[in-house]
Figure 1 (cartoon, rainbow, N blue to C red):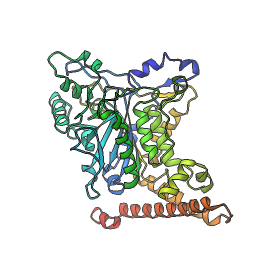
Figure 2: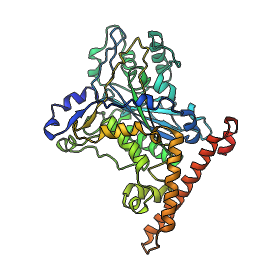
Figure 3: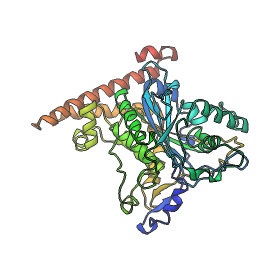
Figure 4: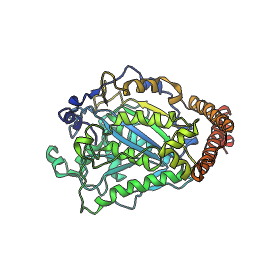
Length: 433
């Protein structure tokens, strides 16, 4: 799950003595900065993408089934466009969509939760359902919508084949079946997340091949638990929701994997939490110094990605977006929801970086982002022309060739997208062809 209540335990595990504190909110209106995000255009330009989503705490009102109020550690969800659940598997399993499937009809939200006994993660299908359930735009969240969304989750099999740890049922309301309880405590955590949580989303465009690596990795995580011989145990320091999202992006060449299974005294000083991960991802995918091939070559992950896929971790279209929990809400309290940084409150880096990200249009606006990368690609090509040729060995020669292909290809793609944005809406498809 959910760092949620588990983070309260972290405060008694010695983090304060290490000089680290749990940083709070920052003075930036992230929601206003991204209010005009154009998801339809991003889907058109980048049909395969991953979104790391940092979700706030949740505070459910009494009288709506299972009562659930979390801590301020939040939750991490990974949304994958171009991926769907294997409906015939009877268990959380993923597969790539057919290439001609419209992006709005093909995507899954991957959620890791301490509730599960025989799975590491579950998947809810459809972007609108993952984030808004069956709530229509500008519709208030009522009991009827809340119950209708749960029925849809059951009908589509979000928890098919999944069992919860028996201890979770101790708080089950009388008269509610175990299956009903499972779906009830999963609302706003595993699906319909904006029912009760603020959402911060960092998007990373991928291609079909790299998305296939993510799918294989996630299916591999669930495989040991499917038969029930091995039980899944969520661990805040070594196997939480952020570990899974981070390492899924690592297999796509975005950054280094985060180790799991470390000795707890070591892991306690450095483990991933949702809001930190969001900031790190935005900066990794936007600010890597791609203009300097020597620095890129020295980055082991970036070098491998170039050599294997002709791609760079920093890419146009890597945008961040923030969305409030549904405000007209009969089911959840949604005023001033907290989502902390794990950072030093006085001189830690994350609060300032978060404010800078949401204060700069190139991180949140597609057009500004494309123009920013257009200038960076031009600088990269100029630097390559000015560089003196040197004998650097076979691997460096292969790297330089891959670097040139990646910069040239990305620059051409940016020019196509900018041309499409300048064209009338009816001519946009032709400009992209």
